[in-house]
Image 1: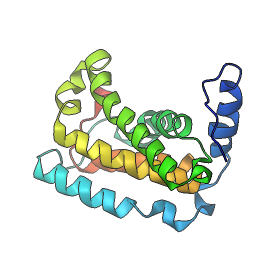
Image 2 (image 1 turned 180 degrees about the vertical axis):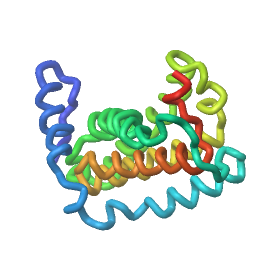
Image 3 (image 1 turned 30 degrees about the vertical axis):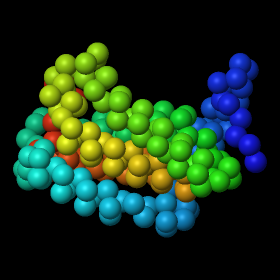
Image 4 (image 1 turned 90 degrees about the horizontal axis):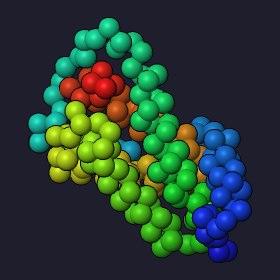
Length: 185
């Protein structure tokens, strides 16, 4: 099976409907368990790198909007970033083209995801510059990109990477001293 170029004129709306659109309709609770397989590895990498580099420290976020943060963090970054970096950049049926093409798609998606963070800080969110340019933070971002990409390829559901991304960022912000970029905007 060949995977068509989604940027061919006239095909981009079809691609979005059949790729991202269908991925929204696939329940994260009906996907193979192996779609979640990299989550423990990601957690170990994130914790090891994060605590080792001083990016993580135990503590509760005390803010008037703390109760709303899980919902806010679900929309951005989790839902919006995953919709683009996985749901648009990785063809939903890429596994049918072979494991090598699937791995290549995950690698490209992860690279763009990692590059997005410094770009975001330098162009839109200067308060995040020191964090988003920190190489150790970018290692964690890379691990998340691989985990979410792998989960998307195997599950074909955008909800699996959204839940992984959301859980990681929510735990980080609420319990591990993560930068609450929402409050800094």
